[in-house]
Image (tube, one colour):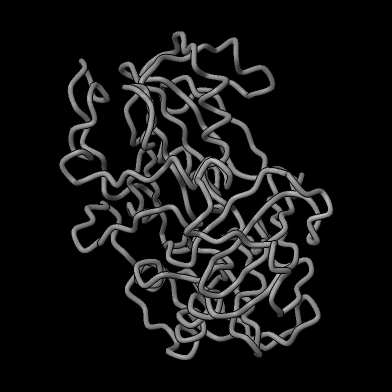
Length: 361
C-alpha cells in the first residue's frame, strides 16, 4: 500500500487460515467491476508505456506529493526512478521490477489474493465513466458496509491499465491519490529499461536485491526475543481494521539485527510492520512527535504515509502505512509494548526502511 502505498518484491501468502478477530464484511460485488480490476494487472504487464506517476497524501490538512518516472517494456519489466519522465537527470537512483515479480495493490493492478481481500471487506461496483490524464476511463468504486466510498479506480478504456486510484476517509475526503501525471502508450527508448537477466541488483535499488528471503510459517512463529521476557513472538495473521498478513520477508544479507518486513492489507488500505533487533534512542527523533499510545511511548510522523516507531523487548517496531490514525493506533496497541532505550543503528535503519516499497506500484 500504501501507500500509501506500496510494488513487487513481496511474497503473497494464502490467507484461508487468517486469524483476524474482525469478521469480514460479506457483500456481493459487481462482476464487471471485478473483471476490470482483475484485468488491470495483466494489462499493466502487456502494455508498453512510459511517463510520470505521482502520489499525494493528505494528513491534518496538509499534503505531501512525490513523483517518479516510469518506463515499461512488456516481457522485461519496469524501471522507476526519480527525476523527469524522459530521464533528463540520468544516473539517479532507480528501482527495476521484472515482469516476473508479484506486485502490491496500486497502479500495477491487483493480484488474486488482493482481490479476494478487497471483496471480503468492501463492495466493488462500477461508477460513472470519466476522463483522467487525457484518456477515457471506466471507474470502479469500493464501498464500505454503510455505502460510503472507500476507494476509486480509473481504468483506461483502451489498454485496461490503471490510470489513477484514490483512498477516501469516512467523510468522503481523499487521503491518498496516485496516478499518471503524463502517459505515453508506446515502447520507451531501448536504453530506458535494463534487461532483468543482466542487471545486477546493486544497480537497480535497495529493494531489488535485499528483501528476497521468504519467511516460512515456522520462522514467522519464532521471531527470537520479540515476545515478553525474551520469548518468541507469534506473528498475527490478522490485525485491527480487517488487515490480513500478505507479506513476510527479510533481507538477504545482514546479521542478527536485520529487519523483518510484515505487510498487512484489507485489499484497499495497506500497512507494513518492520521488526528489527535493537533498542531506541529518543534523541534521534528530532522533528518527530512523541506521544503515548495505550501506555507505550511512540514516535510518530505524517508525510507520504503514517509512521509509528517504538521499542519493546529488545526489538524496534516500525509501522508504516496509509490507514487512518485510529486504525494505526489500534495496530500499535495489538503489537508488543515496551520502553525506549538506545538504538545505535537508527540512522541506517530508518533510511533503509523508508525505501521498503514503491508507493506507485
